[in-house]
Image (cartoon, rainbow, N blue to C red; front, top):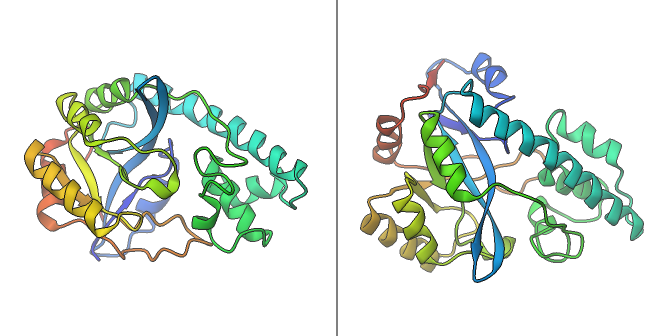
Length: 255
């Protein structure tokens, strides 16, 4: 592995530290995983869009990320309160300690693992716990995916739809939404992901080819407590170079 993408949820706060720690020969692809949603048949479905190589200082997108971070923290705190009220030993203070910065659902999941309530982060992201529609999940206000795609593009970045068919995480969208996203400026789609089955990958790869989207892969590794292995899924050199070629807001960082 010689290229690593860092895409924390709604923040670029770890990028400078990651860049400073790069070993010789390793390249960092800077980005963020942006929370958003789409209206489908009268209901809102949460989505994640990976934004790469955008200008971090672009004011509109920077302000949107700041709002998302505030909303994420409040949302996470309310979920922790619900979990604790049900008798599970999870404390907000511990969630903050584990986050060491921007707090979100992954840190609530990490706290559940830390407290011995669930065995893995993946187990927390199910309907039994804090997966979309789950027992302790709470809806939150999220920007529209169409506005998100516009902001990423205006900041010179490229956009990749993250884990679109990962149904274990909650509600997913159909191919028609990906078609509309491609028309709205989506750059790529995450095909090779731990939560995608072989048929999912086959459908997404065909859709990417049909829509001229860059097909990517990712282990979606979330740190300590995550059973997934860093680098277990990857992006081809050709796809990586296609993303870099289409971006104008920032450049990869090489150690």
